[in-house]
Length: 119
Image (tube, rainbow, N blue to C red):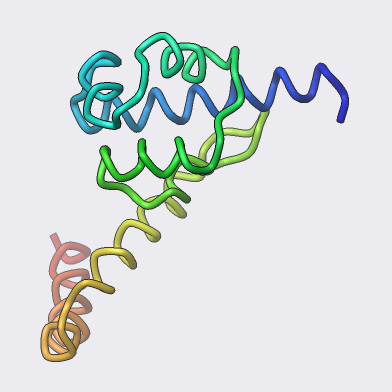
């Protein structure tokens, strides 16, 4: 792997990590403490200066209470796909629901969209 690509990838990943941390309201200090890792290590990962192990990544996503895939949204050098991110968020929400709730969503969602479009 080319060193320039590696640096760019680590920087991109760190930016995604920072975005997720801020969206959940954590400071670097509080998240590193909650995830059970050293603040300097966490900060270096977020700045794109260090690679992270899958186990440390799991600790972070557990602390943030987000799926690991959220940290891999978009691609290096490409903007995030907000529609895809929202769709994945909706799918994750629906996976946690009971069958009866899903039937209700199937019934109500088209009506809600039609109402919104008619305004």
